[in-house]
Every structure is written in C-alpha cells, then in structure tokens.
Image (cartoon, rainbow, N blue to C red):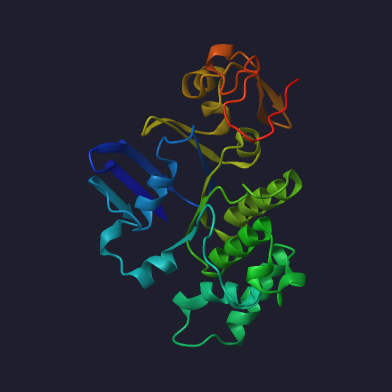
Length: 279
C-alpha cells in the first residue's frame, strides 16, 4: 500500500489550515502524527479518506486519486477511527462492531463476520462487554469499541485520531502496542494522531511532526524527536535520553510566567455567587 500526497492544501473559508503538504508513505508500518493543537493533524487525515476535499494538490492511494474511489471501495481500503464518537447506538457492543463488516458483506452479516468480530474483541480484551449496550459504556470503553469497529473493516490503511485519549496509561500502552504489532503482523499501514510524545517515540516506526499547517519533519523517532525540533515546534526545552533503544523526552518547565494560562497571584473573584475560594 502507498499514500502519495502532493502539494496538498486545505482551508475553511479564507483561513488556510494545510499548506503545501508533501508526503510519500508506503509499506506496512506504524506512523504517528505529532504537533501542537490546531496545526492541521485531523484535517490531514480527513483529506486522506474523503471526509474533506483538498483545496489544492492531490492525494493518491495505491496510485489512484482518493476522489475516484467509491465510498464502499474506500471503506475496504481505509478504516477510520474518529477522536470521539457522538454516535449513540441502542445496540450491543457486538452489533456495533459488526457494522464495521459492512464493506465486506452483501446485505447481512454471516458466521464468518461474527468470528472476525469476536477475534478482534479478544485481542482488545473486550469479550466480557460483547452483550453490553453501547450506550451504557464509559468514554474509554466507547473508544475501544470504535477502534474494534475500525479493525473489523480489515482495511489496508487504518487512520486513528487520538485513539487512546480517554484511556488510562496502562491501556494507552496496551492499545498502542497492539496497533504497532497489528501493522507488522497483519501487513497494514497504521497512521495515528497522538499528543503523547513518549508513547509515540516508543512504538512508532515513523513520526510526522507538524507545525503551522505544514510538515515540519518526517522520519524515524530518533531522527525527528530532537531537542531542537521540540523547541521549534512546541516552544519547550527538553532533554533526550535513550531508553530501551528508543528516545525518551524529558520536558523542562521553562515557560515564562507571563505566558502561562493561569495567574496564581490573581485572588479576586469576578463571578458573583460562585463561592470562590481564597487562599
């Protein structure tokens, strides 16, 4: 599989979000997209799977422009797991995950589809939730169900928008490790947006680092996650050490007080009847 992005641009009204994006991604691998809020990470993956149409440039998947794929063919080629799901399904978990089999089914699910769903639930350690109602689950469980539904598509390319944001640290590591292993053992390309630099550094084959709507750097974690790049992109000083053969980032609190979001010296209460606490 291969994704070729050439001179990609996108904007909302007159506000540019992506500018002159050029990437050539190929072969099964686990890729993390990093960068501050608002630099276009989600917009980029939305341009890859037809949610958004680029303002300029082209996106090709296996040599074919994304715009030329039918929705069903696109669903077979690319799976997508959104950041959070506002969907509300009065369905069981297993029926919700079965929805991911739609691109491979004619009209109704069959026994093979059901076996595939249970295989995925076992990998995600979720079989005990199979008969629970999707509406009754926690935010973290919702997220894992949506991940399972994306995996049920059996795509060649899997796009994920912060799939571990509602999970505790143990489950963040479990899910990220599983995605890395999935890319290697099942031969798919996994592209994940993340805000956890160290988890991305530990498990990713490649890192795409974004700044101001452009690709600032791309390469292996060792190549991209440098003290200079972190300072340039995030405005934070850091120290990089090597842990188990992977870069580990130690952040330094060098942000001047005038740039912080909260002024601890402010003690007056400007909102009446709120019972402000004074120290």
